[in-house]
Amino acid sequence: MSDAKRKCRQYNTTYLKFGFIPSPSNIQLPMCLICNKVFSNEAMKPSRLQEHLQKVHPDKQNKDLSFFTNIRDKFLKAPSVSGLCAGSSKQCDDGLIASYNISKLIAKSGKAHTIGEELILPAVKEILETVLHHSASHSVIQNVPLSNDTVRRRIDEMAEDVEISLCELLVSTEFSLQIDESTLPNNEALLLAYVRFVNKGKIVQEMLFARTLITDTKGESIFNIVKDFFKEKNIPLKNVIPIATDGAPAMVGRHRGFIAFFKNEIPGILAIHCVIHRQHLVAKNLSDRLHQSLQYVISAVNKIRSNSLNNRLFTKLCKENDEEFNRLFLHTEVRWLSKGACLNRVWNLFDSVLEFLEEKDVKLKDRLLLFKSDVAYMTDLFAKFNAINLQLQGDELNLITSKSVISAFQKKLTLWKTNFGRQEFSQFPVYAIDHWKCLNEK
Image 1: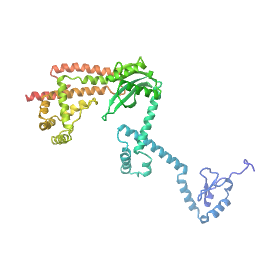
Image 2: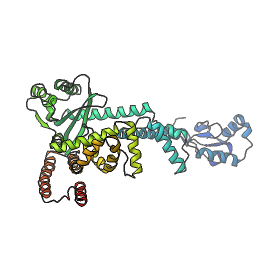
Image 3: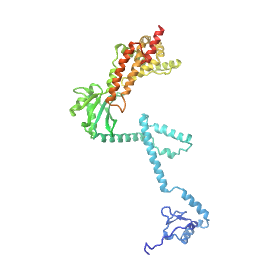
Image 4: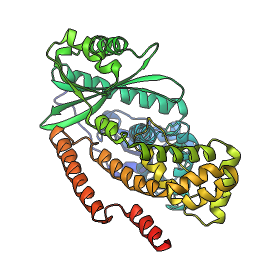
């Protein structure tokens, strides 16, 4: 008989009493509920089905219809193998995505990579069990790998992907380059490079690389690192339009500076002195008297913080005096905002500092007390320097907005000078309070 004339049998609900239901993969084929064996369509005859039940499952041949109905209901409610695989695969994919997202958060926070396994996963488990009242099964936690090596690998993979995407974009895009060389606390010289370019009508700023200077920090060494990186990533040097650097001789030296070597390669390059660095250099230019007062403050801080015993005793004294703070800040030349923070903290703890120095260094205590007004004035002054410094930072800034910030600050200086001549100190609140206290004491 040809396939066209072959009879196609249909399932009948009465076949359930023999333990057969339509196959989930093909409803035209019968499947045994006991052994899950699928028969051909020609075998879908009551005699054939009953014969299978009697020969293969003789212990079930006397069971009533309700017995096979319960087995069918359980079979239909149970997830299929493909469904289990799909669900398991989806859980693994979701766990992988969560692992990458949490690794990104760890990288942004700057915390140790072990925090994922030691803190985050136990915290998630505690939230699920205590707040949501869900059982945090071991398999769920296992699907989010956050070991130290895994987090490091995830961060490296994401960083490499970002670097590849950025370099591919810079191959065909003109951009500005900012170079900064700094020394870490362990005396390791680090070279940082940032790029800024226009992408889809928006100004984008990204970090290009951070490389260690193995030997010296001369202009030629810095240029060789930049040139080798551009060559490695196939980025043409001619795509660099301007370069921004600090005013260090290794950067701007006429003959052996980084800019000089770069101009030998690209003669028309535009070199710019970083606006923030120029503002920082100007802020350092204090009068002799203010500079001397600042040195007294730094000496007092070092006197307390450099000695562990003095630091503990000063902390105890601040607690006894019910001070708002109990620790001084060290002044770091590399951190441009630290000078203002140091002065502000010293002023907040000024009376406790004087009381502590009464037993440790009376001469330094007398000098600080003599120049107390200068310390108050510098506290206000450096707070304003820090404010303008922060205004000059950010991804959305450009040369026009930076110039407007500087111009506005210069006009404010003229106004403040006039107000000082009139004995109006509203713009300098710390100095104003100290000034009126001195007048009342007199």
